[in-house]
Image (cartoon, rainbow, N blue to C red; front, side, top):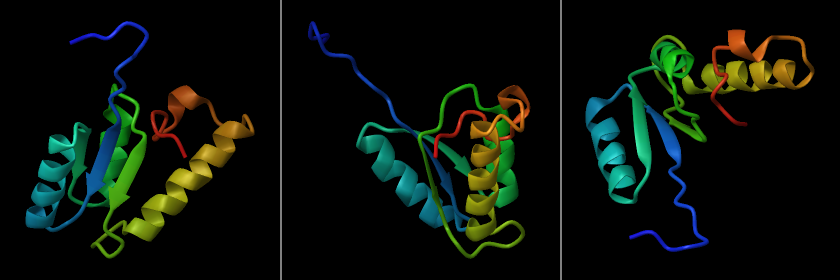
Length: 102
């Protein structure tokens, strides 16, 4: 049902966790709450998902301790890239996380 004067906003969440069972539970709960959900099994996968995503990701929910690029490294990389974009030091079209808002 469409109510005049109201706009339905879909928030997209990227869930990053190396435990598939945990990822599945989080995805189920978020989808039932009305969120659009993307998933990644680790930090490297998350960067790839963000790079190819055609939708804007408003929130990244990630495990902190993962093999390879962990949650701390992922957050630092996304934060650094966002800072460089704000300063005009990198082209947003070339950014890995150009759809991610910090």
